[in-house]
Image (cartoon, rainbow, N blue to C red; front, top):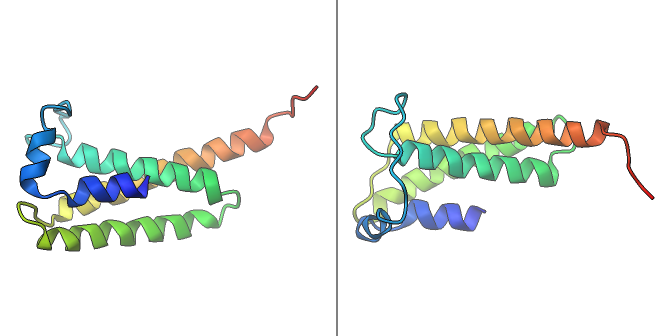
Length: 123
């Protein structure tokens, strides 16, 4: 999941414009950006947070490590975008990354707890 996220976040601007026809444009009233950029950031990081918590988040304390790692990763991708032609760093994108990561972490943690408390069904 991190590989796909990295690829999408660090594609040069002209390559990204080629993908626009493949990706649906979603106008959310909260985003008011004229594009689905913030939504894409949030969804990518939510998926990363969810999969990380499903893989490593069996204890309650792990969520902070996953959150710090994904926040650092989001900051790093924004800084790296400064060196990519046609891309720019954005505090709004970083905020979408962090909020998406938190949403994914919460969903993954909740899913882990539900799975652990469910009665075992065996043969």
